[in-house]
Image (cartoon, rainbow, N blue to C red; front, side):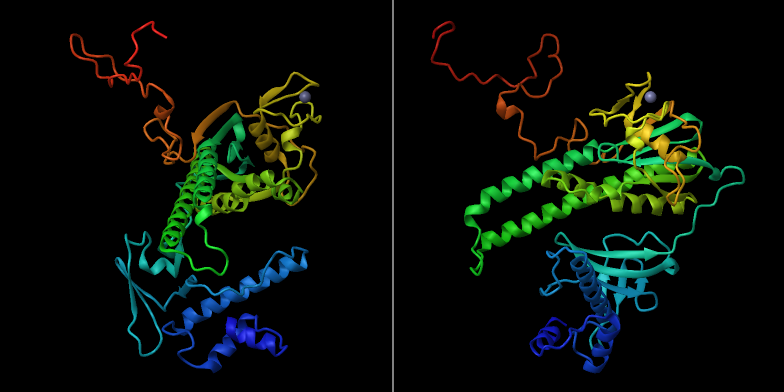
Length: 429
Ligand SMILES: [Zn+2]
């Protein structure tokens, strides 16, 4: 594809970019164009190329000149096969290949968690140095006994944030706060770790055009693995957070979630530090994950305008300057409450589809708040799992973790103290 388009460019022809055009080109090129890939797999490569090209074109049209058209060769491209082309057999998947070549049997590390007849497509992909089989399945929406399912009349507001990925204010004064401090710590530790690695190898980095050493290759592989692990950890924590929101909403019989859409804030011109923090927030994914899980549970998600919800007093509806901490205290009246929960309660009263931003109904503030943590699996989230990327405390002269008191009459369980000034007598200087 890249070669054909390079030739066309040299001939001053328009590049082939549309999916249909590319498929036609593939059909006339005949078998063997994509080596052992069958036409379904080849078409999925074409689709990806076409999508990337148009996404870049759109970004350039919108004024982002840093967006580049896909021109670089790739070793591995995700390839998708649809229902009817592949066969699932327990922990093995048979993937078709080009005519005259043996089919590809992929062995899986575990069983696909859906019945075979529900699987709609499989995608082979490589991320962070690991091969994955991404499965799309048709999953039925949860069914509840009569009178126990989500009630469309019960609305909860959801405020998306960085410290609290989800703050939810439900009906009857119930609230939920999901803490994302572990995710933020994971981002910070990863950034510090990556920077330290980069600094350590900067001297050995090959110059452009110079051949890299084997040591350099090892470093690159290692950093890809670390990057992949970081991404998987954050994603797992985001899924857990959304799962906690949906389970809570199901217990509260909430039928509709009003989610404040903060994507307007991402367009703000700000310093790079601000941008990195906002990018790490991954707002689109938080929304997507929550919507998917809510839909499965039979809960409707609606986006509402969230402007001003975290800076308006719910009691006297006057503007409050953005609080620095987590508590919103109104200088006009005596109101004080948790900033994110107040915002969530205001969001619950907003009309989806851009209605008036003045509250149309009385704001119900949460009185009983459930606290949950996202990312309990992350290193450093608990006492027993210290993040290995953190500098060792003991190395800085700490006495180390507290130990149990010595048994009566027995010897101390503590390590013997390391005393370096053995050549001096006590009191001698
Ligand atoms: Zn007030």
